[in-house]
Image 1 (cartoon, rainbow over the protein chains, first blue to last red):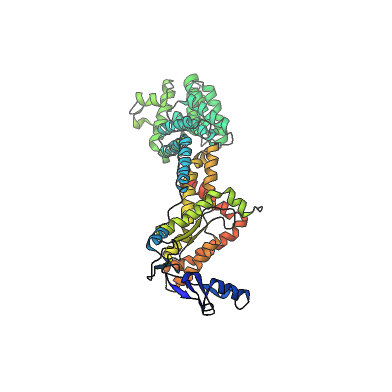
Image 2 (cartoon, rainbow over the protein chains, first blue to last red; image 1 turned 60 degrees about the vertical axis):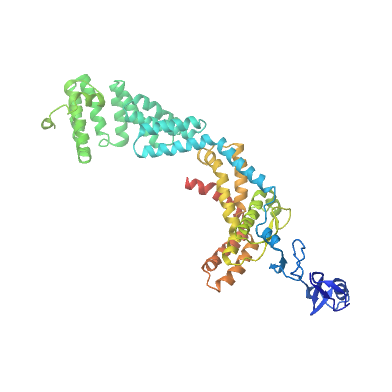
Length: 306
Length: 174
């Protein structure tokens, strides 16, 4: 510890207990007297620093100075402590509490995370056209979050699409009805319900209803857009009644369908045409899957086609 | 917008104040900067502080100043995530989710460095920029952003930031 003499009273003091003011080294008592006598102000006073004494723990280093830290001497032990100041004890339980809260919330809400992942996977499966997988994933999501109306709608919609693609129209119709009930504003749901209703009538061999619904759809879409469905409905009517006016209608709408479809998808059109001819010639109305099974190479030879 | 005293906001969002100061202290520890005093929370202005030695280089000073921004933002996202999916994607609220969101958004809204942090950064950046320190030069617009963000606290920009990184950003990323 360094000692100095007060230039006012002459007393010997520890350096850290003195100040410098107007170039003079003064003890505490003398500086207070000088400020009280308005000989100087506190703004002019600077506390003397003794770098041989640790400012943190007060350790005396004799005449040797400690390393300066922010202008004051600090012993190596205190320097190390200040440079890696430990966290207060309460911070550890506080951090643990945050982690526990987050883990608890994650576990509590895990079914939502599960459902979210299922919905994302279902969307990805839908994008790939894998409706069966998407339907399974949407069902799983709905089981995880039964209170979510959005997931319920998604499940019905995807299930409807899957059934529709598998030609199970009555079941698909029921699924699309659920969608429309839940959100009547979505045009896509109404369109799919209308499609499935037509398929359902066909499936139930209710050809009058099939005809009525098809004509209704043709009114909305325009005849050319619905020409394939009109041809199919008239072919059913011809197969069941043998009324020649229906046959003429079939030929008329097949020609229109040919114009639209053939350029886009020649194979699909030819398969469709083959089925309509089979329906009219045999009077038998069979579903697409059964038709493909019976006539894997088509009903007629290629050269016989219209 | 309506006025609520800063001390009341600090009280209501005290976890954010604590994490903010912890962010400063964390980077002081990581960069071996002596910490002379630290207050994680108090009823006063400022609500918390960390008194540390002057950093030896600008990078250290920069990290200490923006430490809370990094720590609070990351923690806000991490904490809000479990509550985000039920609320944002399924619209299903639960008390647990609200507690977690309060915690996360409280932390997120204290992510901005304070005026004092911005001032310290400005002084250091000016000195370092004279020596052509790239980070210091890049920091000037950042300091302006911090000043503006602090000025806009009266219109709840800090709260909006908490909402944005707690609810909006993860929803966009998911």
